Image 1 (spheres, one colour):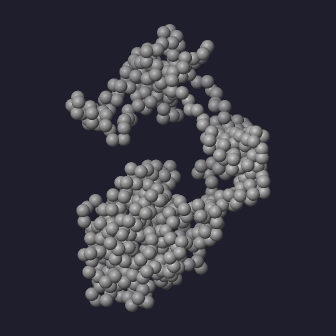
Image 2 (tube, rainbow, N blue to C red; image 1 turned 120 degrees about the horizontal axis):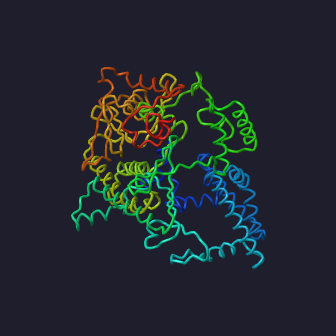
Length: 590
């Protein structure tokens, strides 16, 4: 029991990843004390043996960094200077070839690679100067020298142009100035006018206008106000020219770009169409032109053959996008067979049964392809589930609050104000959890208990938040929910039904629980002052007591199949793979 009392939130979170929560007591030595996430990371980089129990795919980046640090320590101890250490790290990193290929491919990634290479060259030059100026050029001294350097920032003061020059500035900055020739570039709809709402995060400007001028703050009024401001700004830009004014815009049938409405309103005349027939001087533009010719069935055959020959030559040089194997919608399926063969064992969990029932495509991309995204909501849910264990152990509110204070600074919520807001929400959910626990009259048997059962060759694994015993000695599974949406159709809720089926299959027979007495969802994340418990009746009271087993077999067959359907549901707004979903606007092109 003493070990359970010392069970911290980090270990409980690890238990939810199918690790054993009943670790034996190892004593009260310094190695068993609480260490924040930053300290754990530093210790792991200093001694890679700390990563022995971490999944290899997750630990690989940390191991590479640990090896690099070990190399630095070894070389520094052997008397190597800063330049030699940098060259060794650069050679071992393997970044040279990767950045070179990206730079030669061009495009945005190529530009980023060029900047990275320039930064590396500047670092090596700095190390070489340091070693020549202050031999023997110890690596520690070089780091101190870099940290002590002060790089002056750009001055914000106005400076007059020297000699013949072209001034590039915004319309706001041009107010009060004049030139003989003025070019107003990019007079596009969406830029002139730009009707996007601007201002501070909380909209203080609108509040001041409403208070001082009693202005209309409706959406239409704000849009009208922005349009007037944009029109005046465009007028300012046009009237900066003494003799010659040039206004440019882009439009046409083959593009979504349209010239600004202000071109007609300001009386500058009809635009003169210009077409140079030239392309941007870049490889991506050349590849795009050649591909458009090759795929145009109306183009002359000799022209298409010549374009294909050029694309083949570019593909041999490794230019990105030149090889048809990289073209969108032309890549063949790697394998059109099912995910699981006849001899394979399919493993499912109660949560996966629910997610697969809601949307098969989302399950495939998140579970099978790993396309999920960690967000603050999942981190908050992990904390609340860990606190639920402390509540079950009888910890007082003060003890729970103290424990949360210890770990909260290690959690990343995107910013201090967001962390404070999430802490308030966490405190609310913990309060609801404590109130529910006080009102719950069922006997608690165990928390965070894992199970594994076989259902006709299908392996069902999972972990229950709480396992309780009712007055009739039956098992009641309690699942704590921290989301804001309550569940519908509790009688056939997939996750709860699978939990009950696991009880019926003997998942908790060692605890003396073999008959399901129902299950419950305890909602603590809703925008209500009180918790909400949503019970599911026992399987035996359902008209079809075998519905959960039937659902598991159907889901397992679907998980091992070759086709996965995208389905709209109430979880679409929080879906991490919307851009790949054909039923969503973002992924309709898929």
